[in-house]
Every structure is written in C-alpha cells, then in structure tokens.
Length: 192
Image 1 (cartoon, rainbow, N blue to C red):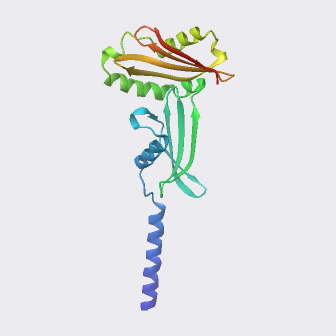
Image 2 (image 1 turned 90 degrees about the horizontal axis):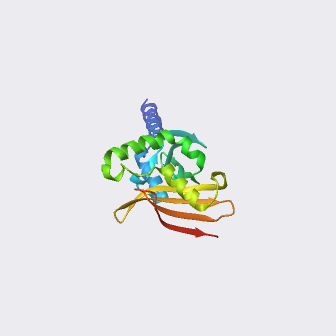
Image 3 (image 1 turned 120 degrees about the vertical axis):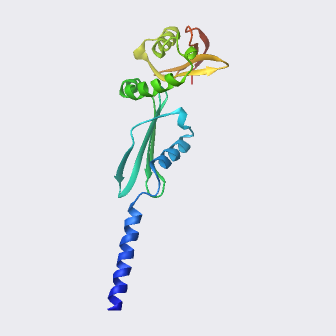
C-alpha cells in the first residue's frame, strides 16, 4: 500500500511540474522589453499594436508588434517560457501603412498632443503639408516616390519635420523643414 501512495505522489508531482512548465514564465511586458532591446528602441519612441498570444511549432508565444510611424514596422514572436526571440520581422514604412495604422497613430498622437506644450503644436504645418513641400521641391510626382521617413522633431529648440523620400532607382532625398512655416532648412540628395 505504501508503494501505491508513493507512486501516486510521484505521479501527482510530475503532473504539477508539467502544468507549471506550460504556464508562461515571462510577462507580456517582459516580452515587450525584450523586443524593444532587440530593436534598440525605447518605449516612448514606438506605438505598440494590440497584444496577442499564439502557438507556433508547439511553443506558446507572445506576438509583440510596434511601429515607428513613417519609418519602420516591427513584429516579434517571443517564447512565453524562455523569453527567446523565435522570429522577427522588420519592414520599412510604406504609403499604405498610413491608412492601415491611422487609428492607432491618431490615438497615440492625441495622447502626445495632450501632453505636449501647446506652442509646439498650434500654428504649424501638418505632416501631409510637409510631405507635399518636399515632394514639390524634388520635382517628382507622388506615384514616383516612396516616403521612407516623416518625423516631427525638436532640434536646437526648433520644431521641424524630417522627411525622406526614395526613388525607384535608389536615389534618396532628405529634407528638414521648419514646422512653423514649411521652410526648407536642409536638403540632401544621395545617389547610391
């Protein structure tokens, strides 16, 4: 009888251990931090997409996705038990992404706008206007270029837009425009 009780105790212990292994050992927040580290970014530089969990090749994973609007999209699959990055996908921002992520960007932008000083936002040109100024200066049509970057930044106390557009042949146009009125402060053409 003692052997049966000992055997049952061992089986119960093994089952409890197996149950513990299947539970996630890292949190979603830990997975987000791991993905940010891999991308060499900080939380305030990105907008996170909706959190998801999934199973891939028998592993439980967190699907961590975030964007840097106008620049890059990141997707990471992170093992829920080990924290290891199973897969990562990094893509440049494309024109269609503006539409796909519009609600996400708008929600994040509203939060940023609410926290930002009013003088940094009111009376400035919009991102679309900044893009159109750069496009007009380049001499090309919208369907001839791909915008690879459009970021509003504070540089030496001046709010500006950093715009980058690329032609099919690889030529890149980089612009810095004053956010207050759209004045082109700097322009660089790279023919790699």
